[in-house]
Length: 389
Image (cartoon, rainbow, N blue to C red):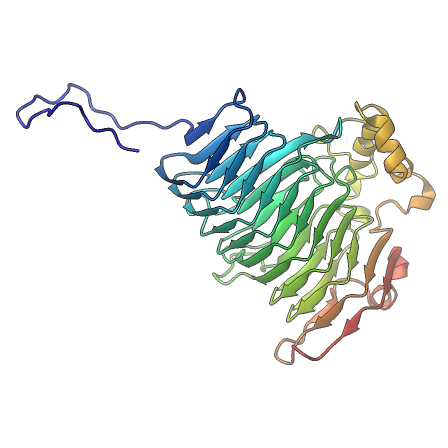
C-alpha cells in the first residue's frame, strides 16, 4: 500500500522541522481480538520493521495463500487463538520466526483447534539466529500438517515444554530439511521437559514426516556438535513418533530420559546414531523427579509435583487423572521413577550406509542395556538393519 499526496508539494517547499521514520510496533497487518471470522487471503505482505501479520486472541481467523517476507522479526504471529488457520502460504526472509501458532490451555484442556497446513517456510532467523524456528507451536488440540520448513541455523519446529503448553497436538506429513547448521545441542524438531513439564506434555504425535540433513556444518566452539532430527530433551515424555523418515541426520531420534515415548515404524537412513537414549532422570536431572513441591507446570522445576498438581488441583484435574492415571502413581516404587520407563522402540528400520558406520542405540548406553533395553524398562522388538541406502 502506498500513500500518494493529493497536492504537489513542490520542490521549493520547506522541509518539515522534524522528520522521523515510522516506528512499527505491531505488524504490517494487525488483527485484534475483537475481530471474529476474518479471512486474509491472496496478498503479499512485505518490508515491515516488525512482524508481517500479527494476531493475538483471534477467533475464526483464516490466513491463506499469502506471501509474507522481508520483515524485521516474525512472519506470521497467531497466538492465544482458537478455531483459526494458516494455510497454503509462504514465509521467507524474516529476522526471527517464520510462523508462531499457539492456542488452547492445558490446565483446563480447552482446545485451540488451530490448523497450520500446506505452508512453505524457509530462510528465516536471519537476525536472531537461535531459538527462532520455522514454526513455533504450543497449546492443546492443534494440527500442523503438510508444511515444508527448510534452511535455517537452528530449529525447524520448536514448542511445548518450557516454552508453551503441549497436549494432544498432531504433527503429520511435514518436511524439515537443512537445519541446525550453525548450532550445537539442537534439533530439527525440538521439545523439552523443563520447568516441570516433563510429564504434563501428553498426547502429542509426530508421524508421516520427513526430517533430513539436520547437522552442524558451520563448525563448533568448545562443545562437540550433537544435532538431532527429533530432540525430546529433559525427560520430555509420552510422545508417539510413528512412520517418519530420518535421512542424513547426525542423530535420528533423541530421547533424553523421558517416559512413555513410543518410537514405532520409522525409517532411518544414513544417520550416525539412529536412536539416542539416556537415563538422566537418575543422574544430573534427578532433582526434577526426586522432589516434593506440588505446583503448576511452568512455575516449578519439580516435574513429579507438577504432574500431581495437574491431576489433583487444576481446573480439569478429574479429566487429567482419568485419562492419564499413570501421572498419579509416578512416585510409586513400581513406576521406576527416573528411568526412561514404559517406552517402546518397535518395528523401525535403519540403514547406516557403508560410508557412515553409525550405530542403532547410542554408545553412551551401557553395552548390556543396548543388548537388552528391558533393563531400562523399554520394550524393543522388530527393529531391523537393511542395506539399501
